[in-house]
Length: 285
Length: 301
Image (cartoon, rainbow over all chains, first blue to last red; front, side, top):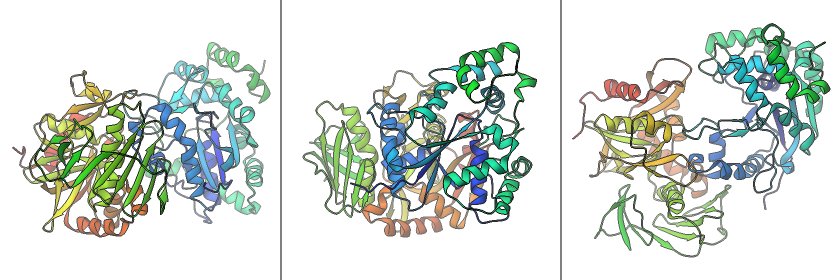
């Protein structure tokens, strides 16, 4: 039996909640470079839904498998990935934390060092999702509220990534911060906006990484929205959907106030009231 | 026993393989039999989720479906589960298991499809989902013969790299079938997935064809199709990364041999990177682009 080393840190989030920003921050601070790292070489993290990663460790075309078969194999893929590395591994995840049909943790505890869950106000997510996917706000809200929503689920063609079950926003949050046995660090995107130095420092302490305040500030500066937008303008960003105008857009909080109408706000708050209240996301009266 | 010809190999099989070209009377180089497969290899160099690899030995085990044991590049032993359908048995036999056999035989299998032109074979490689099979199928609709889908097997014939005819079926997604107006009543590759087997109407079933060109198909965030020739180390890396079941090579101890073959291929053949828009995938437009730019003399009869 393979020896399991707890060396995986899951970087988990619902889409458009700051996962890319966090990965770029980590990429910059761990690069030992004073220059900004390329946005198209965020080498610090693997992608949990990467088709090539799955095929590398299974030795099979994922396209010849059913969703259920892929789902049941994914935990062993992550275990093989963990075994292959002496160092700590970051793995980006959009899936909800789940148990597979065979009763295994999708993200195995026995290889897990920790997890960071990035949370963002779903009112702002709905706006960001609409821009990112070039869809109407209503469709964006429907996805946030959909108990069965999945990414890359179209089975009439081959999606670039493996299917990821998100469920609705509240379930996604609950799955990671309550259902999973992982000692999760929950980070609010809004706290990254208002006090990035303090929040990023908190993340580094959780990860057991020591850097000077100057190094932290440099990484923050190299990961600033201004720098990222400039890079995207110069070289493009491979993670940008083709129809989106840009990936790095506004990176702000409360932009929903200028965009969402009363009906849209109510649709989100009525569905996700409890967690929005807990994390301070309910609109002021 | 059934006898077939595929990838330049004469195969005899206890299992009927209706997808392959029959070749009665041929002297077999590879045998496929039912039998017992060991739980593990005694000298595994590499263990994946579904496979174990050692020099000249390989096991592929799909729990609930079958176990396959590949030995010395000339023998495949299959132990199926009682309830396994023939479709399931065949899809993995002609996929990953065949890939291991080809590496054991020191062939050079690329992950891609291939068509025949007057100048020779054009191989279309690229990542999963990029549209290799769809492009080959679309070129077939334009009148070209296809030699292979999914696995394109290169061997050396008196110092010349040749492409060996493969399996006379495309594996296409429902989306592509609709786009190319194919008959929707096709057999699924396996139950539970929306991928279908389409017979290659114009199948090149003759002796192995010298290679004319290798294309690497990729996606970019741009509305237009473009291309450029790839040279140097990037060329080597792209071809290596497009080797079928590259992950088996370390355990099979075939990495060094593969390296030498790839170096020769890199030095003797052009590699063109064609980048297509992510959306929409107009496969007919892409096929026309390939024809206009890379098939100067048109159809191969």
